[in-house]
Length: 146
View 1: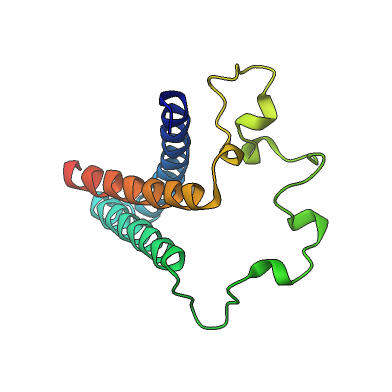
View 2: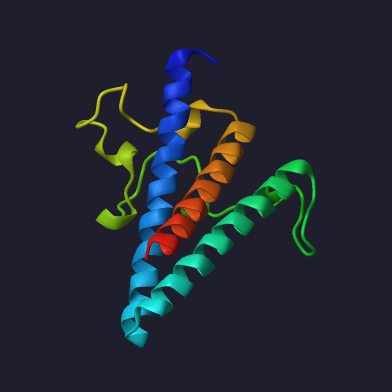
């Protein structure tokens, strides 16, 4: 991998990590606010961190060849409706909170856009693993500081 590709790969991991970190942080704050005590926020942070690390581990196991019961190894056997297809010809309208950097490519240069399509499927899956483990580790570290 060249130096520029490594930068793009790290940018992909960074974007996924802090997207998950922000979502989990908001959910943990809601849990802590609902119960009205800081200890519940700490417990929620630990629980979210462990869930993300386990999720990364299960992605790794799936990448290594293990399949859960009831899931087919080749998901492309079924005909996927257009709304659920990953690679589409044109991008339909989505609400602002569901958009990513590809929707704002007129504001970004080629050096700053996060594009997962440049990498192989295995590299994308590894980026998902690292992002979930990093976000889970950040949540654990934050729970220790609170």
